[in-house]
Each structure stands twice: as C-alpha cells, then as structure tokens.
Length: 314
Image (cartoon, rainbow, N blue to C red):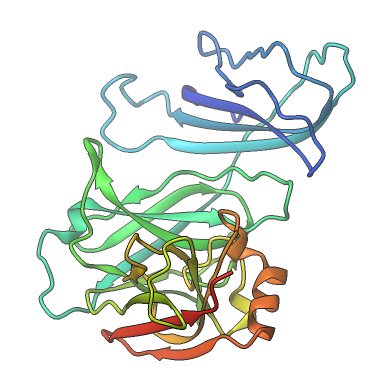
C-alpha cells in the first residue's frame, strides 16, 4: 500500500478461473478487518482462481467519516491455485491507476436541464474469458458535464453509462448513449486502450432513439410466443460480449417484440427457438445465424421501424 494513506473501504473477492474451475462458496466476498487489510475465506474448493482487491483510500488530511470528495481507488489481482491445503500469507499490493477524464454532450430535441444530475459514467474492462479485472464503479457527472474516473488500471475498456443517485436507480427519460469517442474511436462499441496519457472521453447522449418492433408469426399468420428475436449488427468486429448492437428479445404472448436500445446502423434480424440466455453474444452463434439468411435492415437515427418475422413452426 502506498505510504501516507488510510483504507476507507476494501473489497476483496475470489473468482473461479477458466471454464473448468470449481465455483467458490456462494458468497465469494472477503472483508478486510479493522482497517489492517487482512482477510480470510474458508471452505474454498480445489481449483484455479483469481483474487481481486479493490481498495478505497483517503489521505490523512481527509475527515475519516465526512469526506465530501470521493476517495481514491487502488486495485490488485493475483492468480492462485488451491490444492486442498491452506493458502496463507498471500500478499496483494494494490496500486493506483490512471485518471480518465471526459465530458458529456447532450444532442437532443429538448435537452433536460437536470439530466446530468442522475447520470453516471463508467468503464468496463475487456478481458479474455475466464479472467477477472478490477476497476472503479461509475462516477457522477458535474453540472458542466465533466467527469473523472480515478484509479483505472491500464487495459482495454468500453465506456458505459448508468442512471441513478445514492438513493437508487433513476429513469433515463428517453436518453441513451450515442457515442463515446476516445482518440477517434467509439469506445461505446469497441474497447480502447486506456493508459497514463489517454485523451479525454467525449460521451454524446441523444434522445432520438431508434425503435424496432414487430411480431413473430407462423407462415399462416398465427403468433408465436416461444421464439426469441435476435437483432445483431452486420459489423462482425462488434460481435463482442455485452455489445449494445446485439439484443435478444423474447416474444410476448401475442408474438410481439420491441427494442428502443439499438444505435443507428445496419442489422440482421431473425427469430430462433431454444436459445440460451446470452448466447446471442457468441460470435460463432451469430455467424451461424448470419449464414442462415436472416433479414437485413437499416435503422436511422430516431427511426421507428415495424418488422414482421414469419417462421416455420417446429
């Protein structure tokens, strides 16, 4: 731990690593005791794990209980293997990351003056399957649209937004992220490298959302409710986990479906049955759908589109 600082809160967790790792106990979180940074977790099964530490700290000059500025954030990760014997004297050395700064631009029909008061901007690490990364949570935006995310470890990230305050979630009121530009690349779609000299992030919000709605029908016009509608971008480079350009929509009892979260662009759309939750983010699954001849559509900014999908019922 860097000298001259105190722990305000620490969050240490254990995650299984790799597809064949044995899951840890139901509550994998471990808590530091008495501010000294020690932690213990019992009942860990044999397997390979990643242990992470996220530590919120304060300088000695800050009031311990009433600091108004957000605490700093330090992080550390380590790989461990458990073979049935106790793992002791494990040392994690959290280090500060870089501070990512940026601003929010409102691009809408009737911008809401108080919209920024409930907006949070955050970063999501892009990591290989089976690995774990630590990063600070979403941060608030000030009245001028500026934000600063401190303690970000070097790596590749996507920019995400959330709506809420300390009291809980808040409505978006029809606003969504149009883009998050970092050095000419849209980090809302494709992870970008974040390091010590990263430029400002420019997050643009718009209330001119697209909408795709429709009905899944049999060839004779009967509605189908057991199908899921997959809408996915034609740009294969964006077939990544949690892509905002890929959605899976469960048809309602009358066969209807609706989404107002997709950015403008070109998409494939199809209806499938017996698909697992989240499977639509798998590039191999999307490739198979693309090769099966789905319908192709274009969504313009603010466009409302109705689409009828006819399928042969099994």
